[in-house]
Image 1 (cartoon, helix red, strand yellow):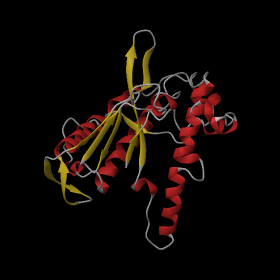
Image 2 (tube, helix red, strand yellow; image 1 turned 180 degrees about the horizontal axis):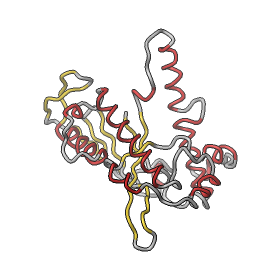
Image 3 (tube, rainbow, N blue to C red; image 1 turned 30 degrees about the vertical axis):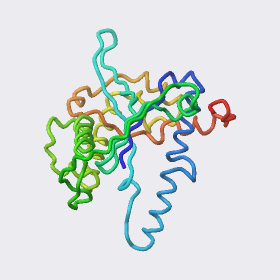
Image 4 (cartoon, rainbow, N blue to C red; image 1 turned 120 degrees about the vertical axis):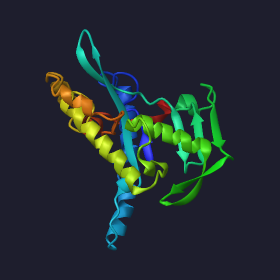
Length: 250
C-alpha cells in the first residue's frame, strides 16, 4: 500500500494550534500510539518474525509526501510541499475511487459542504501482473496508476517494466530508493524543512538561520516524492497539545 499525504495541513502550523492538533491526531493514527496503524502492523510482523520468517512493515505499507523547489528573485532558492488535495484510491488496478470529501466534520457531517465521489470499475480488462503472477487489470485504473507513478517518481517513460506490477518487491524498492534519495537531498540543501531532524518547533526555527547549501545536489532529484516525516515535531505535538473535546470537530 502506497499512501501519499500532505506534509502538513494547509496553513501556518507554527502559530495555529488547531492545525497542530490535527497534525497530532494524524500522527497518532499513523504511528505514535500503541494502537496506531503502523504499531499494530509491527506487532503482527514481530509475531511472524519470531517464527523464523522475516517480514517488515514497510514491505506492506509506506507513507510518502510530495515536495518541490524553485528560485525566487527576492529570496533565492526555496522549497515547499506539493499540497496533496486530491482524494484518489486505486485498488488492485481494477477500481479507482476519485472524490472530493475530506475526513473532517465539514465533509462528513452531511449538512455542510457538498461532496461527490466517483467509483470507476472498468469493464475493459487487459493482461498484466500482480505479485509477479498473471492478472487481469482494468485499463483505466491501471493506466491512471502508471501515470501517477511516472509523475511522482520522475520517470519520463516507464522504463521499468516491473512497475506494471504494483505489489512486486522491485516496485516497492524503487519507491523507497527514490524517496530516500530525494529526502536526503532536500535535507542537505534546505535545513529548515519539515523532517525527522526536527522533533520541536525550536529546532525547526533554529535551522532557519542556516544558509542554503549544496545547491548542486538539486540536479539529482527525481520526481517529487519524499518520505513522510513520521518523527516531525514528535516532542512538541506530544507534550504541548492537549486533548480537546472532539465535539469541536464533529
